[in-house]
Length: 297
Image (cartoon, rainbow, N blue to C red; front, side, top):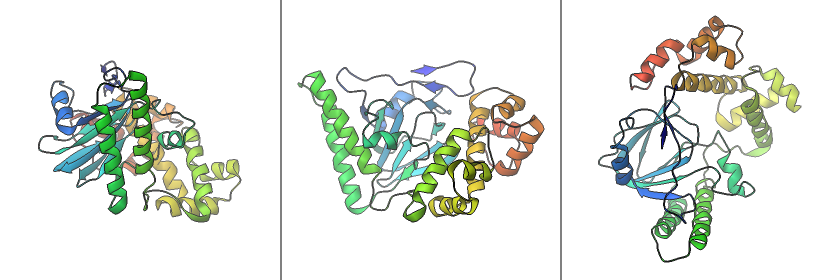
């Protein structure tokens, strides 16, 4: 279901599949292409309120997630999380499968719950070797059970939830994980990351987070560089710019309103900050994005 309103990007609301499916759906890429072709909004950006996992067996699918283009091919997986901005490329000619489920499908107390709530989880995953085989087996089993019939709805629902948990855990526990901090700095980075997510609209200085978490600024910077390859200040700025892009793309709010929501004292300060880091003004970004192209400086 698509929820229209004042926003520049339609919000796609999860519509449950058949009864007993545990709010999990597994469809071929061709079926997703058929569904999207029925809606005039399909070539444009959307904000789903559910998780979308896409894997490609043959061909290539280009997909924009939070203003970055990804090429999905040769067994790679793309993970779009609730609230992210996405735009599909041409799905015709590619084969693969798509798994869709809302965030409350898996219990929050399980180890999968922590993974699903991670707003910094990687978008593109490229499992190989034993990982790729195990993930494919998990998907095959989930797909087979989704298409099965003759089992009572409560039992089928439980089976699908458990199999989905297996798939999610396999995807997020690869032998060579993407974006997973290791070593002595892991805890510091994870605490910093969560603090930034909660406070980026009020605080853009490393000193605040160092004081709040009880680390030195140098320790935080080392932890962030070890985890994601950029400094602590750059990490904060990237999160602020991402939120600014989402607001500019998703709403018709003027720059002054976006600036206020992100804690800037005035529109001029925000415009300079955004242009320096995004390579173009907020107005130009919005124009390019709504023209159907991925904004570039």
